[in-house]
Image (tube, rainbow, N blue to C red):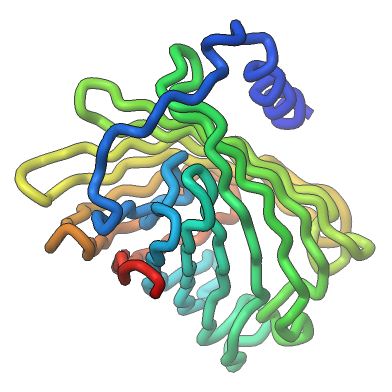
Length: 268
């Protein structure tokens, strides 16, 4: 309930601000071919890919659960700039093993989202964006590759720059179809992340995130975990990252990850 109230307050905040504060200011001039990594964190930032430009994020994550189950996943997101403040996201993941079937191999459910930036440089919420999305039941739920449900989600994104450190705060909620046996009908998340410059193209990511407890047949205890690891921008259009995830409480698996973000270029 606290997460729901916080999310509502976050949205209402944009309506109680003075009218002049709600008017988005022009984005600072930036090279549209410069990569905008959202990996490796659970959090995302409020930035969007330039109109007509395409960016690919992909990587691998190896999870080890307390019961010894191991899952290898390869999440991938294609980002397409569709307007000066809007970005289309197409996401899925490949799996080698799942928590319900260690021998499972295949592609997971597909998610379609649209990130829209409402505010820039607001004194309270910084750069502020919303990311509504829908997940389609395109994968097998019997082998754990998908949930077998249609999910509707909303993510609220607040991004700030504090002394050269990029700070992103996310609050999100998901409502699923079904009876709650294979996946909870309602789930939520929160996360706070920081991108810290070190030297040159080298940076460091640090994050704390949580998934409040859920109800129903697939209900789970609350999770809180931390994530940390280096990031490196090789060239302006390509960045890589690696790191680890460590649970603080709840059934979050320990994990290591690595991946890349590639700004492919502008569509013809």
